[in-house]
Image (cartoon, rainbow, N blue to C red; front, side, top):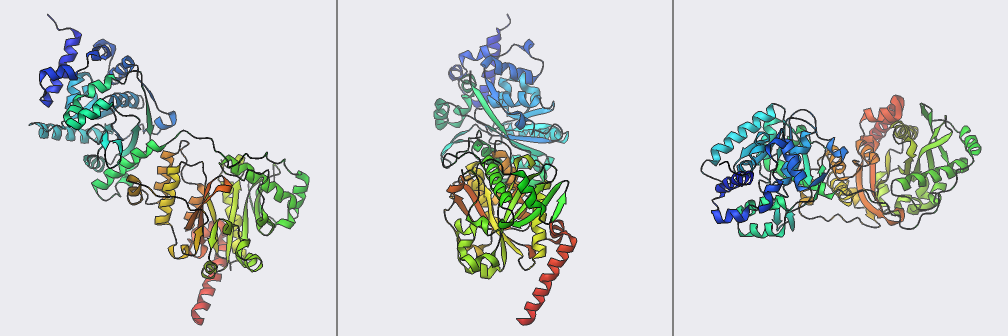
Length: 595
């Protein structure tokens, strides 16, 4: 007589447990009685991904992943997907089903125990034996060869580098994967594949972890119960941007690459649903727009510094543009509130505006202001007002000697581009060109400094990583001794956070990629910060501004005398850059002769 479907499926799993040398009475305990009703009949599927989907549907398990995340998975070429391993069976079924909808060439590395228990999945699995049986070495060599061949053909390979299911990690004080197996680095280097980290939310039952404390093989033997007890659960998945092989190959050792990938995967856990930005007090309504005719009249009396496609850039004193300045203040508040910052007042104007230069964009077609900067010249402000004449001194405590060291400088701040114009790069580029032309016309002031904001809209982990990177890589330590924040930003981190500085954050592109993984909207580091760093900017200190919606301000300093000539040409124009460089070459020669 043919065996019943149940006994047939039970035999699959009992045969799998033979690999663990578990006695028959315990097998009945280990294989859940309810497993059979979740096991699909052979005629209900045509391929392993359909079988996986059928098991999931019978379990009434759902999974959630955003369309944006799923679109990050490359549709062609060799790809290794690395994942944490929270459950043991379910995540493999979900990933095979999900990724097979993105591309057809999907396989997963699995242990032979599970392959024996799920023979219908064999075509989607590459088998390894983690239990050290007598023929394990031979089986694993065969599996490694199959991995190399599959990736060479351009396939997508799912790997759980932990090799065992997540459990209590004493050092990390949480349930997580143990250290990942360094073979993952070997696979990457051999195949030159890009890598996509995926984080799967969740963990197994208390019984699973208790059994694992008795013996690790009992934890593995409990996996079928852990599959069944996920009935009616929803599993959350988060997918990172692909990490190109060019980035990974620069990591020195296999151990470093493996730690890097584990950290990048677990960083996805920190991603949170976007929160509503809370201002420190109830904001007042934005002021009404100013009189357009009066603004146009003021601008008509100014000299245009440069223009591009209907956008014009001007610079003026407060006394020259009272109506336009009021509109600049109004638009500042509109723009900053949208970014999770702002003063909460109807207009963002303060006492410093009366003494600063105002560089602004004018849309000559739509007759509206599109963005602005505020510029304060230290040789004008310090003699009149002392340090209190600088806006940055309200955020940072300056030792006056810093300006003896730096020399004549220009404070830049309160920069914005109106939201309607932020989809284009041209407005910001034109503002920077206006600054370049202003410096070229005043070459004795070669140093730019000012606060660059990292808004409270960023995840706290992103802000901490940005600060830690910049403090380690992009700081001027000798000048930093002359600056102290009014309110220090805490950057203390434990465990893996400390590894990030040395293993992950080696340049701003990598930093931006990591931030994009964490942020729900996928944003990298602030574009203004990135631009300052391209100019050679260095960070002196960081301050948390509770008055400005807890924005985090980094005090950045750029000495244009050390900026690449090609960049100076872009912003000052060829003639302006030549004049600027010639001026400082002559000044350097004079200083050398008088020394």
